[in-house]
Image (cartoon, rainbow, N blue to C red; front, side, top):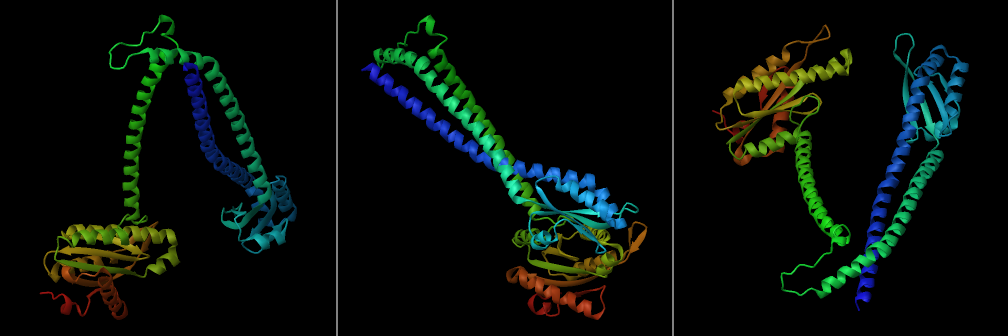
Length: 416
């Protein structure tokens, strides 16, 4: 009877280990396969980038001097690699050297083409582009071969491990389990007597069981600690990404979502919400005359000035950038008083008018401000923005570089 029980237990144990090993194998394969494909793609991209970098000077010289021989050498050097099936050198002035024009015409919008800018050997200015078309079939074959090799290696390890485990269980674990089952069968339930252990068994199966229990407890504790650390990290990153979702990446101000969340909270404790909608005057000329880097610098400096003006006004509010050269200041007010709003708007216009020094150049922009105020009971953020936009539009049409209140504001939210 005991023998039958022992054999049944060993069989179940072997089946459990086989199932767990199979699940482990499936998990490993689910990780290995996409990871292998990704690594193969990364290896190709890295190789292609190195090739493009090493040949970029020659390619630039070829299109700079319009030399077909140099261009052919560059193209042939790249085509030595099987994963590259077409190369094209194209200057900004219309000079083209290519190994397969038809392929580029048919695939110019596909993901198989990588572009690398070429720069003049004289003044390092952009003069053209190196286009490399990858052979997707070769890339797929190499990636699949690499993955199949890894999968085969894992399968061999898996089969070898399972076979060894089965032999170990039958020859080494089976007999001690039989002895242990007999000892447990002879024990009397309800009594405090321990199961006698011979000295010969102190370092074998009985010791392994005790060690396994202690190991299980220790591993469980470590797993719990790792889970706590993971939860803390998840909370940290959730807060980080939540903050990023509410912040304008260029200026560091609140974006539209961040401003709306601020107003939602402020409207619970304040009686009035005011909106100053600012649009920069002459900003397009900054980008046209000095470049987009100067435009970004201007937006950042204007954002800093607006933040300083709000802070010095001692009014509760938030400065935000809602897109392009449009800024907003939302104010949370306890009293419907236009004086501090007018003062802040005046300072905002004056601050925006101050010249901005950028790389020894003075940049001059203006600012048109539209103002709207809503009582908390009537607060509608879309309507508030619409009213402020109309007020700003009237400034843009009449004189610019000034501020104006929404004309019908007195009917909806009278000011003293």
